[in-house]
Every structure is written in C-alpha cells, then in structure tokens.
Length: 173
Image 1 (cartoon, rainbow, N blue to C red):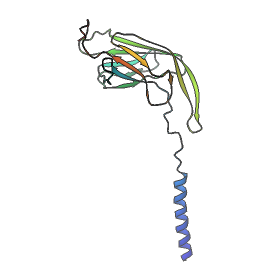
Image 2 (image 1 turned 180 degrees about the vertical axis):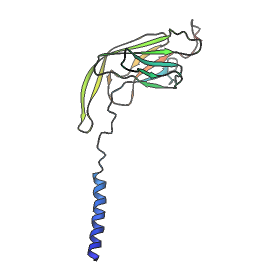
Image 3 (image 1 turned 135 degrees about the horizontal axis):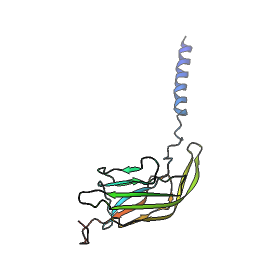
C-alpha cells in the first residue's frame, strides 16, 4: 500500500512538471498588424502635443472611417493602410469654437504592399513601403516621416508638427 501512495505522489509531481514544460511561451506574441503610428508635436520646441478638438478619418475609405472624434484627447493615432490598394488619404478636421469649417488638412500616402512571413506561429502579414507622401498646410507646420518601411513594430513612424505660439500671423489666435 505504501508503494501505491508513492506511485501516486510520483505521477502527480511528474504531471505537474509536464504541464509546466508544455506551457510554451514561444507562440506569436507580436503585434501582427503593420499600421503606421503618427504622433503630434510642437514645431516651436519639439514637445509632444495632446490634441482634442479635431476629427481624423479616411477619405473614400470603406465603412466608417472616423479614427478620432472631436473631444477625445490623443497624442498619437494609427493611420491604417490597405493591402488591396496602393494609396490612402486621411483628413484632419479642426473643430474648436470660432474655427472655420473649411480648416481641414489632408494626408495622402502612396505605398507598395510587401507580403512578409513572420514565423510559423505568427504566419504571414503585410509590410508597407511608403513611396510618396503629401499633405496640406492649413494648420500643419510640417510632417516628418521617420521610416518609410511600415512594420508591426509599435513605434512612431511619423511626426506631425503644429505651430503652438502666436507669431502675430493672420488667423493665429
């Protein structure tokens, strides 16, 4: 009878060890979407900005393309690209009290889609190479593309700069 209890204890410990060994953490833990991240900055001192009086969305995008609605505070935003297209456009509509309705900047990306096999666990995904980029300058001061290759790394690939001080220019408040 003592041998049976010893066997039960041994098999219980062995089962516990095997369950720990079989818990494999080498599965796909990476972000599987390649989406460019844009951050907002002051053109005067390069400090990060938080915006809240803008709406940002896709132009001619399928379904509801609103990515940021007025009143939501944001220091960055993801601007998705489509693997089935080679061009996307976004609008940034400025909506604070007294701001003219036609204060809207646009961003225009032209890119190539690059199929990429990440690993057996993660499978395939797309990366994108931005080949051309343009934007309007109604309120945007400038935009810096940090890297034209959009991967699944969770880092900013674009900085959008806004003027943050009144230089006495017409229309500045």
